[in-house]
Image (tube, helix red, strand yellow):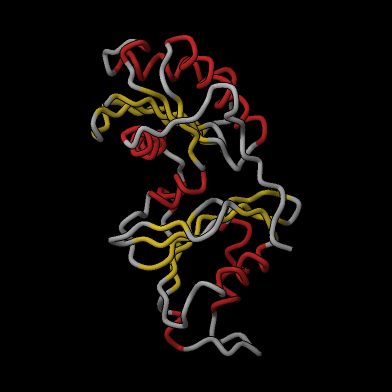
Length: 239
């Protein structure tokens, strides 16, 4: 199954082609340049690298957010137009799940965090290991509220891995929450050793991961409609 994966929901634009789970080609850029000018050339490049034409694809998966409003619109509109033109199925994939899935086999909880501005984050809670589970919807809320939500899912000795560019702005708040040396906190001693920040290389919503998650749905006969697939901006949180 040949699937094209597209993500433009963050400044890191990524396009990839997979075939039966194997990466054939991937084009990922983190540069100051609008997605509108680089997306179609990137798609063309990846298809040429894979020696395939759009009509030979089995489907397309696209990141629908949350993330940059403009970036998401560009990616979704482009993917819908491409799939409609060649009559191929389309699947929308959560950007947060895409980032979390980079750590699919990590034991314990995986929490992707993106900076949503307005003193808020986009976040989600997943559980990795032998059984991949989504435990919350995609959320948009202040970091303290997100960490309170996380508390409702974990036990004192739970392993937690945080990932995403939101850690650049909110990493200190996460550390303070789980640092047993901070005054007034009663965090069990085991917690400090079980909270981790993933390396920055895992922050990227890769096109190959988008394609992989899309392929999983397509293999189950599940896809989205060209007419109803829309960006997921997620500006409403739990507070």
